[in-house]
Length: 164
Image 1: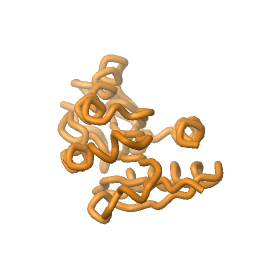
Image 2: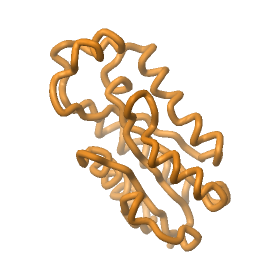
Image 3: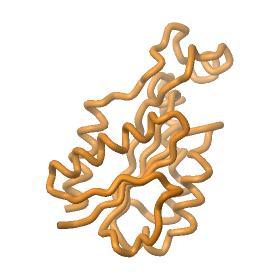
């Protein structure tokens, strides 16, 4: 059985929940997964593949996630790797904001050439501030959680085929 590390950076737990959902789908597809926060990861060479996720913060994929990819690019380039992000502007924003969010994995992807990229809505702690609504076209009464669980599970099912 292949061993897949599903690792994430999270502040509020929303990215961890998505990582757990992805790991469950991969497990159900017959891949053995291990779920760990980025700062808990040790030696990577014993894994057969990787899934790395983090939220967007300040119009950047979380710095800790990019640093993790950069510091482990040798092993991540040598084995199947997928990257994902969570972003309010992807989940709730106008099409131009969604396109902008889709470019935020480019710096990490340029380092390792991942097999698959995932883009998912994120979670807000409270109503979107006016500047965020204006900049990205987020509705005033937008839901605080824009994660699309069926889309996340479908992405993970496609990923399972790519990792098998």
